[in-house]
Length: 169
Image (tube, rainbow, N blue to C red):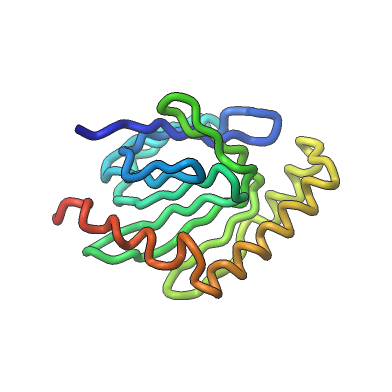
């Protein structure tokens, strides 16, 4: 029997940003892996819209690291990665929550790039990010880039081992 895990992304100050439902793949004391199903609904509170997702994702949330990973899977392969820089996730019951700090690291067509630096700059003023948090977010982005380059967990094949859990289309 599968366990549903509800994911909530917050903006700084615990403002609900967006949320969606997933299926538990693995849970440990330090992290959780979940499966985002094709056709799931993403409720985007900031944009006041509901999006229907047209892809499967393997997702990673850490309870001690400052990033998340969402890997889009098509035809049995990871097609792209989307990583948020965020405060470490928390889990209470079947709900995982994290505070999104705007900076994102994505991989498309084999190339990694930092996006939303402008959003980070504007939100750091809008939401009054403390200076130590701004510095920490930038440091954690650099740490994530190093982790990816060195193929460290979860970029060491940890996500790929769940690909067979996705139904073939």
